[in-house]
Every structure is written in C-alpha cells, then in structure tokens.
Image 1: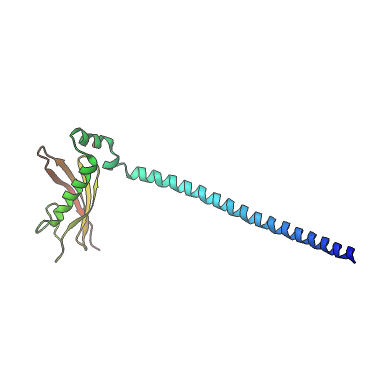
Image 2 (image 1 turned 30 degrees about the horizontal axis):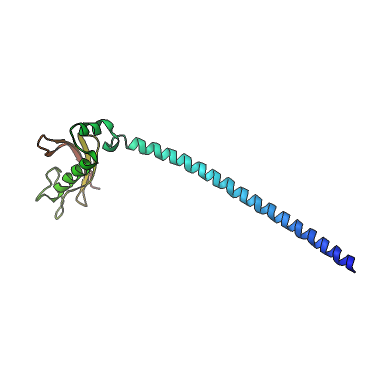
Length: 166
C-alpha cells in the first residue's frame, strides 16, 4: 500500500512538473511575443521621432530663435534677444487696442467687429509674418520692422491678403 501511495505521488509530481513546464513555456512565448512587439513599436517611434525632428528643423529655418546672424545683429547693437522678441510681439499686439480701424491691417472689418492680429512670427531681424481676423474674415500680413536710433519700434506693411469668404 505504501508503494502505491508513493507511485501515485510520483505520477502526480510528474504530471504537475509537466503542467508547470508547458505553462511556463507558453508564458515565455507570450512574453517573448510582447517583447518583440514592443521592440518593433520602439523602432517605429524612433523613426517617427527622427522624422518629426527633421520637420521641426525644417519649420524652424525661418525663425529668429534659430537664426544666428539675426541674433548677432541684435546683440552687436546691444540688445538682449530674449527680452527683445517678446517686446516686438507685444508692441504689435498693442496695435490691436488702437481706436477705430487697425493701423496696420488694410482691410475693413465686418459690422460690429474689429480686425485684430492673432499670431506673430519673427522670421529674422527685419521681417515678421502675422495673421489677423475679425472672427468672420481672416488673412495674413508680411511686415518689416526696425528699431530706430531712439529705440522706437517701427512697423511697415509690405504685403497682405485676405482669404476669400466662402
């Protein structure tokens, strides 16, 4: 009787070991599949990140923040570019508060509204692009700017257009 109990325990132990082996092998295969999928995703993300970095580099080409020659131009004149850029944008946004029609935007607004500059991008030490809208009509401006010897900021409208209303 003792031998039979030992034999049953031995067979049960073998079955248990076989079950654990098969189960762990299946879990290992699942985890390897997950690791492989994750590695592929990481590779795809790295490729996407490289493409996005190239796009950002291309888009920032005409940007005062990355234009060393324009930055040097201001620094040689004694200006701090980090303080000057927000000042230029603020001065342009202040023109939105002018009474009557906007002093730079050459288009009349629709009834009861005002044309206002929404977004400003400093391209270099002389040029700005901006978009404007009154909520119904919108367009874009190409401006030049200069800082006079008396530290006065002057804007000059070079080109503008109004998108057609559909």
